Length: 234
Ligand SMILES: Cc1cc2nc3c(=O)[nH]c(=O)nc-3n(C[C@H](O)[C@H](O)[C@H](O)COP(=O)(O)OP(=O)(O)OC[C@H]3O[C@@H](n4cnc5c(N)ncnc54)[C@H](O)[C@@H]3O)c2cc1C
Image (cartoon, rainbow, N blue to C red):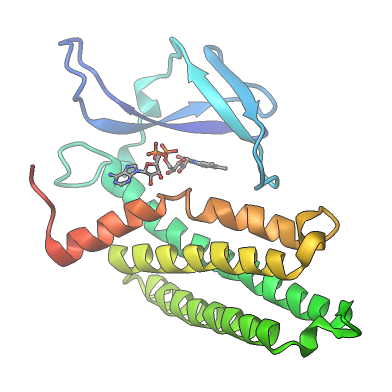
């Protein structure tokens, strides 16, 4: 709501009735704190990711000048479609999401280690039970592995050589790891994990989003398998 513009991807129609016009990107300018004429914005109540408000936007007869079409997004040889530019942005966002997932999982491991040392059952700290020690060790190793992978892909990105398949692979593996590790961390907090008194419930809720946005895990598997096996032509 505080933004100065909304970026809208839409299909251009030419009056011929065809709904398969090129996908273009349009900048709809606005005053911060308001929505443009013709736009309604309803906040969506989410289960996590509360650092940012998400809106359900409806556009009806919104008028913009032709100069609002972002020409810089038009990819040469893409038939006037902007999707290639969006894909390039998504590749970067996928590496960033992998980093975010690693951060959540790492925090979950650190909080769990502290909790296991502090919480006593059967007259001893939980940290003395080998079953939970080994579980935490496995969790920490998976976080470390994902961290190395995303740093490696991020270094390629910084060098201007980001592979879309690498972006998909790191997003897929780091986010699926984070969902699993934060879930295990919540479990290792026992009943306390299912309360809002410990941060682990937030790590778990926020990790759950990372396998959904910037393309779900299935979309990442689609990108990877298309590269390995070629696209399936119906
Ligand atoms: C908090 C939040 C913030 C967001 N922020 C943004 C944003 O800033 N900008 C933006 O553009 N979008 C944003 N999104 C949208 C987000 O990117 C999409 O929700 C996400 O990509 C999934 O698309 P969808 O919701 O349409 O799911 P759908 O495409 O309807 O998918 C539903 C299910 O079907 C599966 N599925 C779909 N197609 C296939 C297939 N071909 N093969 C196998 N399985 C398939 C999916 O994996 C999923 O499990 C946000 C979403 C959330 C929740």
